Image 1 (tube, rainbow, N blue to C red):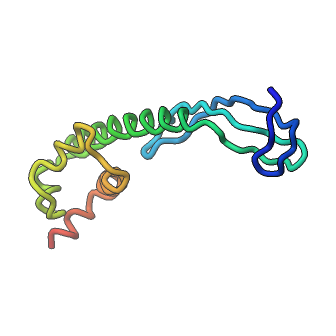
Image 2: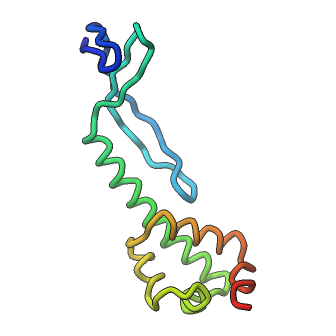
Length: 127
């Protein structure tokens, strides 16, 4: 479909759709579909579909919530309890349970990744 380029105003730009995958915070990927305008004149691609962005954001954070759950499980299986993590990090009791249920932020995922990859960090912080 021919449309106007939002960058240069060229009236024969093309509206396209793309499917891709975006790496998640801890591995794997989340599928992403989006519409964009491609302009042959200025060579720019401009994303135009916020509906796809909202769907992607929802899928991305659902994936992250599942990732937090599996990260916490792996940390627990290595012998570190939620209570120990919460005590050393001085975060409220039950925080890891909330993270496991999906109430998680990117910062929490990053923290869990550090704990998983460098288990000695908790011991150092506990000194």
